[in-house]
Length: 156
Image 1 (cartoon, rainbow, N blue to C red):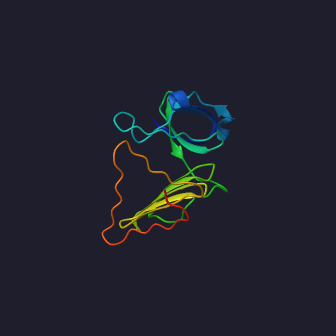
Image 2 (image 1 turned 90 degrees about the vertical axis):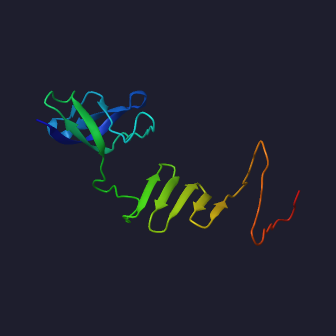
């Protein structure tokens, strides 16, 4: 009989895509390394691991704590989702960087520090505090159907 258990990650094993989980309701027993269920692992390969201290939901078979999987993380207690919109898919990293897709607005945004890239159906906007660089081994073409504006103190 399969059993679902809620536990907390105590060790992550990135090279195996596994983690150990402690179950406070079971006298703080720590599991064997459990495989982490991910969307793809052959042609398209995903890699993301829970953090130590993260609450995870685990599924176990009849063999006990050595026969299970980590199904995923859950938001619990004071840990709240980074968005409240059902139309947003987002990954937010510990350093504040994030990838956000909003299907209702058809926008994709990448933020790394104060550098931002925003794409929508009609435009691409890049904001960077230091430099934007375009490099090619071949030609670089800039073409505007109406106007190409360049505003700068120096043009080389």
